Image 1 (spheres, rainbow, N blue to C red):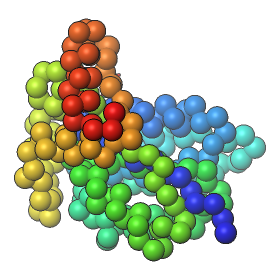
Image 2 (cartoon, helix red, strand yellow; image 1 turned 180 degrees about the vertical axis):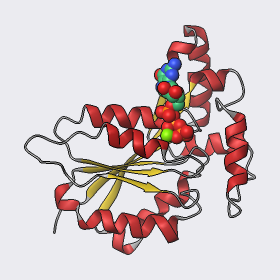
Image 3 (cartoon, helix red, strand yellow; image 1 turned 120 degrees about the vertical axis):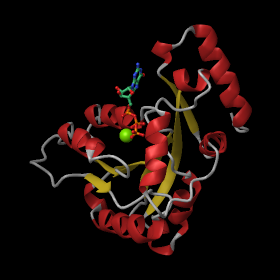
Image 4 (cartoon, rainbow, N blue to C red; image 1 turned 30 degrees about the horizontal axis):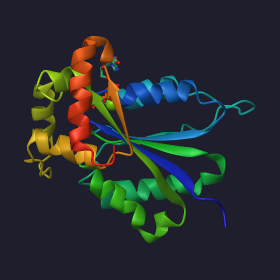
Length: 210
Ligand SMILES: Nc1nc2c(ncn2[C@@H]2O[C@H](COP(=O)(O)OP(=O)(O)OP(=O)(O)O)[C@@H](O)[C@H]2O)c(=O)[nH]1
Ligand SMILES: [Mg+2]
């Protein structure tokens, strides 16, 4: 049986730096063939376009079919069944030509429903979540707003009638941290060392495994 393809889920609030991380991983792929599934909900295809522009062909490969797949029909955690599963199955058909898959969740996603989808029979046999990375915007967390752009969050919440995201931001933050195997403290250039230490302590309080 073919080896299961490793999937890394990248979560974190709106604007925390998820696409920036993926862009760096694509640009420094060390020959790995990376597919990216990005949740464009609430955006105008910005992340997909941005990532496509820095897609790097592994050595010896001529113009591959794009490995950037966008989900545009609602928030990933609410459309797991309708959108995520079929897209993932399509991607898995090509798994011989892929080394790993990265998934960027939308900033408001509850990661749990997505991670649970990997228990589905058709997916379980072909892919496995090797890690959940939660990105924390140090500046936004230290300022108490948790996310850089609260207006964008409100707009995204309103944009989808199916969205049941009345969950307070604090709870979402805790949920994203609770799912994390790895937490990245991002935007450290925007805070001083003391603030960074405070954010780290807050994260550790919310992450029992760290
Ligand atoms: N100063 C600073 N800015 C950063 C850093 N990382 C990302 N940014 C900026 O933060 C903004 C948001 O970054 P993205 O990578 O698009 O964040 P995202 O989590 O993908 O955002 P959404 O997909 O909208 O949820 C961009 O303008 C980035 O250039 C960092 O370490 N320091
Ligand atoms: Mg993004």
